[in-house]
Image (cartoon, rainbow, N blue to C red; front, side, top):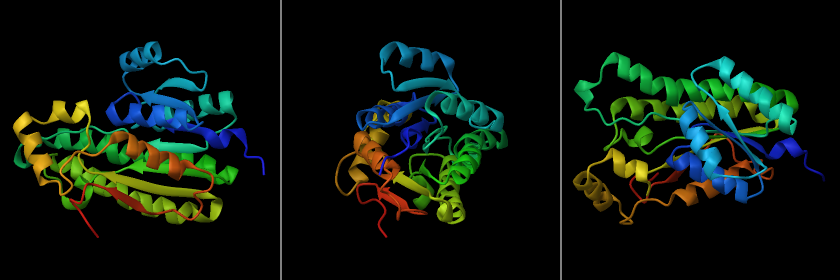
Amino acid sequence: MTIPAHHNAVLVTGGTGGLGSVICSRLLAEGFRVAMSDVDVSTLDAAAQRLANPELMFCKLDVTKPSDFERVLDQISERWGGIGVLVNNAALTRTTPLFDISPEEFDAVTAVALKGTFIGCQAAGRRMRDAGYGRIINIASLAGQNGGAATGAHYAAAKGGVITLTKVFGRDLAAHGVTVNAISPGPLDLDSVRELLPADKLAAVVKSVPVGALGEPDYIAKMVALLADPGAVSATGSTFDVNGGLFMR
């Protein structure tokens, strides 16, 4: 059976960041067409200078704005005929102590990771439902399952909400050929993680991981590619844990 070309068209939010950029690279290597998106035009420009691939496009996208999603989805449709896969990866990671988090900071963090995921699932999910095919992969976090140890309460709450949204959208879209899943990484071996955590705190985090190491970002990206595959029909509404044994169920 011939697979329609747009089934391999992927939108990755927060695509220029640490994990986002690894996900984009892996998907390209696996034969997907990738729309790398970010709210920061300067990081998109830098990525465009660094990466040259005819199956890669760059899109400015503020995930808190439905109109931005619609514009980018239109751009993808114009170029590749439609959207097959959405990877909701965008997030603001903050480590502010619990009683120092202002309402404004709480709103800013949850607006990107939680509301942004909702808007993305809604915008792409509507088009996927109408087309009868789609794969949505939400990047959650261990923090959303255990309350977080190194990240802030707002980040943990947002990621917990992402896991719940995955179930809700997964249930609603299952009969329309659209699967919705989440991947929940523990601490990853990324420069962004090292920038976020002081060396002593990072060392303590690594020591607490049962397998004794930070997670491999490209393994997360491979899981994204696996869930984005047209054959991933029966995996939906699920959260896949990759946390080195920090959280087991």
